Image 1 (tube, helix red, strand yellow):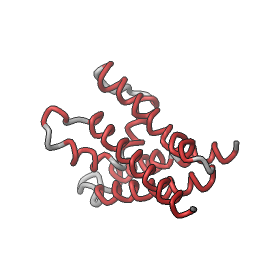
Image 2: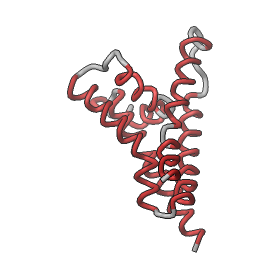
Image 3: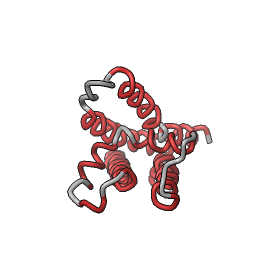
Length: 150
């Protein structure tokens, strides 16, 4: 039970990075622009690969590790979808800010991917791409770890 909770908590790590990145963008790099946002996104995706490996090592079950690690990302994606698509604007409370902070570290990767299609521009499509990247990279980490254990 404790290992499952730890895997879910590992899934909240991008939220912490998002708060740090927001602080840097709003205070330290307010007038100059924050360098390296693409590298931050690549680093988070790389860390997600290793978190996938670690989660299957902790739990033993591949599907459970994949679902529990990516459950926070899915929760925040649903909240972003409700706000951005259904309601039409982002809420000015903690339920509106936290999902944006969760996807902030990988937002540049998502925007770069969806930026070529004009009608897909926006925060929610970039977050969908980010979620798909996290899901696929963690699945790859789980698969590689499982093959190495045989």
